[in-house]
Image (tube, rainbow, N blue to C red):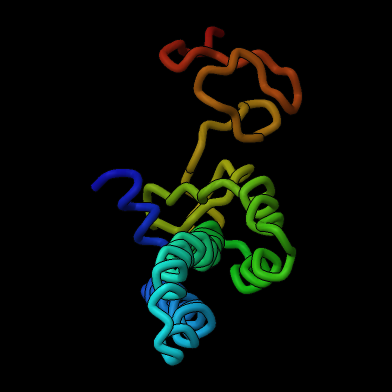
Amino acid sequence: MSRFDQEWALVPTGARWTAVLVALAFTALMAAILVLPAFAAHDSKALLVLAPMFLLTLVGAVPIAIYVLLLGYVWGDARRRGMNHVLWTLLALFIPYVVGVILYFLLREPVPVPCPACATPARKGHAYCAHCGTAVRTACPHCRQPVDAGWRNCASCGQALQPAGTAAAG
C-alpha cells in the first residue's frame, strides 16, 4: 500500500460521497441558471454560447469537491493523531479561504508511536508507555527525557550520551 493510499484511507466514506454530491449539485445549479432558460426559450444561438459556460462550471465544481475532501482528511487525520477532530474540522470549515486547513497542517501534532508491548499510542515527548511502562523511545540516562538515536548530547540536560553499542565503563 502506497503512502497516498494510506492517507486517502483517512478520508471518511461520507466525505467522499459528500464531495461527489456537492460537485453534482453545483453543476446542476449552474445548469439551471445558465442553460435551462435559453433551452426553454428555444434559442439555439444562446445554447451555443452557454454550452461552453456550462462545461466551465465543471471546472468550478472540482475545487469545491477538493475542499470537502480536505475537510474529511482533517477529520480523519486529527482522529489518528489523538487531537480534537471535531474542533479542528469546524475550524477548517469556518476559517475562510482555506486558512483553517493550512493552520491545521501547521499546528497538528505528530503521529503517536505505538508501544511495542501493548500497542497503546504514545505521544511525542513520552519515552515510556503510560499504560504498561515499556520504553517506547530511547531516554537520556541522566534526566530520562526522550532522545533521538543520532544525538550525542541530551537536548534537555546536556548530558553526553553513549553510542548505542558502547557499554558504560567503570
